[in-house]
Image 1 (cartoon, rainbow, N blue to C red):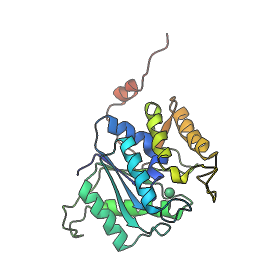
Image 2 (cartoon, rainbow, N blue to C red):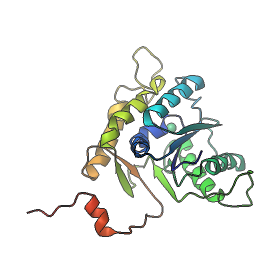
Image 3 (cartoon, protein in one colour):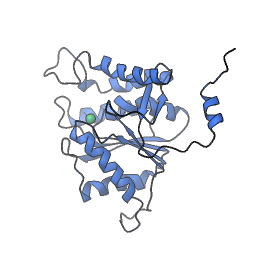
Image 4 (cartoon, rainbow, N blue to C red):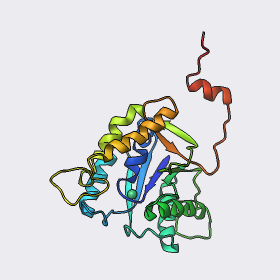
Amino acid sequence: MELDILAVGAHPDDVELHVGGTLARMAALGYAVGVVDLTRGELGTRGTPSVRAREAGKAARILGLTVRGNLGLPDGDVLITPKTRLAVIRALREHRPMIVMAPHWDDPHPDHANAGRLVADAAHHAGLAKIRTGQERFRPKALLYYMLPPHVLPTFIVDVSAHVGQREMAIRAHQSQLYDPKKKPDTYLSQPDFLYGVDAVVSYYGTLIGRAKGEAFFMKVPPEMPDLVGFFRQQGFRRLR
Ligand SMILES: [Zn+2]
């Protein structure tokens, strides 16, 4: 299945927490949007791989995804090896997405950091004909990093105000990971305040673009701006009278 956008997460809830609104918005526009998670999140303190797979499937339906796959790499041990790189190359050549999303490489969780580097390496190598997988070679047009560290200024921000309900429902689909006073032990995600923090981040990025909610992306190479006037006119410019 060929996709317009493929978002890669290290764990089954990474994509929902950081780019759920963007994926929902792009799917609503009619684009083919998919997610591939690198691991099944089996190292998570709560939830089993089968529970987490069910939750990921539910979130995919809420966001309107065309595809949700899982590469089954070991949770907590996402490493860049010829084997893991080949697994990502296979996924890229299968789905042939114009746009690929991956976690920013500067994240305290080693799985997130390595996922960002692994996807970048694979996006490059997928274009090399001599790396053989029995598929056509392929290279995406754009690699967008999400999950930005605080010191990184986004290259652009997507307004997700109209899709914040879907975004929240998709996050809440990962019920095994979230606050439930009856469940022990507590984790970072299961703190009652966790979702306030998540919402604060999308509110902050929204504020930067004059909207209610936003999701931020970073590109190593900035995108070309073909029509400056048309672009800013589309942003709603009006001369004050
Ligand atoms: Zn994660």
